[in-house]
Image (cartoon, rainbow, N blue to C red):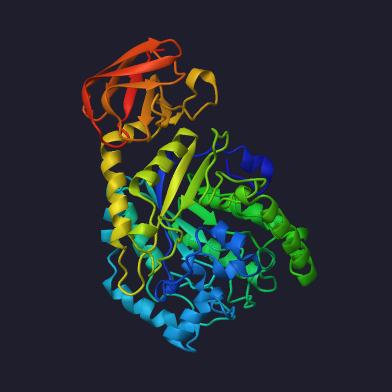
Amino acid sequence: MPYEGNLNSLNARPLPQWYDDAKFGIFIHWGVWAIPGFAPHLGNISDAFKKEYHRGVAMTPYTEWYANAIKVPGTPSADFHAREFGNRPYRDFKEPFEEGLRQWDPDQWAEAFRNSGAKYVVLVTKHHDGYCLWPSAVDNPHEKNWTSERDIVGELARAVRAQGLRFGVYYSGGIDWTFNREPLRTLGDFIGSMPGGDYPAYAMAQTRELIERYEPSVLWNDISWPTGFDELLDLFADYYNAVPEGVVNDRWVHAGFFQKLMRYKLSRRVFDYLAMRHIRKHPEATQGVIPQPIPHSDFRTPEYARFHKIQKKKWEATRGMSHSFGFNRNDTEADYSSAESLLSDFIDGVSKGGNLLLNVGPRGTDARIPEEQLSRLKFFGEWLSVNGAAVFGTHPWRPNGTDCSDTVTDADMPVRFTARGDDICIIPLGRPAGTTLRLRGVNLAGTAKLIADGSPVGLRQEGADLVLEFGQPLPATFAPAVVVTTGK
């Protein structure tokens, strides 16, 4: 039965099983901003607003926000741009970006993504700067020829699907700086910058074009959505009817009274006053971005953040490997999170009902993914090739029937759990050594084995603790998974 554009119909739709089972996806932020590839180093996005709220939007570590940052005098980005490029307009980066495409090999990317263990790929098709990575037939009335002549979206979709992966698209529906060129400094400016006028029709037409041309398995909108609620629900229904196993994220806050009110300067300044007071009073509370729930979505999207308890609703953590999504020329190995910390966050998220959408930010000059990022994808791939059964197709398991998902060993090493059928998987987030591993407060019985080599693992209950006994000392590899078949 076709879906209809109302909440009763849309919210009755079950989450497609493939998405719940997939667990790991690749995000790709790539565009003309990758030519300058610059953003200040102030820490994460939350740190930018904590340290310099009055110009926080122009101080974020996100290089993909470069087009706005260079409009704000005195920012590191504006100074860098003046020093390196003089008075050249941002659109001048289009030519060298498209020149770099001559070296692009989408099949090579897709192979690297498959080898990482990822099950789906989401490409940024249009970010806030408005530049489109496909030759859109929908004309931008404010920036002519602001699309790629080469169909990057189509070529990557073909390459990814040839590797057996799902393909999805990101679209910046809430912001487009070619329709609203006002420099953005504060969070109030950012929220109030969603364009009106001819932009809602443009965004709707482009999103529908992406659906019709590429049939994406993931429709990932960002920031907000410029049309009314009824038009949005019709879009969801049409998408589900065109792509029966498609999923949509939670960043579709439609244009309502608050969004329209925030277009006025006085409203933005009142908002900024209250936001600054909150940040100063609760600096520890602002960690990453967690979008507000909306009436319909298939999954939630914490950004550089995660949920600390098992969630009823499906969610997907999204983050870059460093503090930026787009390529930053100033990032060194020290600026990237370690492969082990990224994998730990991934396993932790899976144990609480989440997926991970891990970003790569290719260079613009040569269309290559930096080695620091490829090495981390390789680390994921090596672990998942051995231990994938502990995450793919699983669901959270509650030790002793509780929501205590932060179990530790007697040495305070975190341990996470997943389940599939009669199997319970135990994953220590560290490098345990020796022949025993004690889990505090866990009661579990059954037949156990080490997933890596199938060797038997003894289970012994000592009071409230579960002791795992290995036939030989563990080789101190990272996160060795154990599966326990309970037979219940």
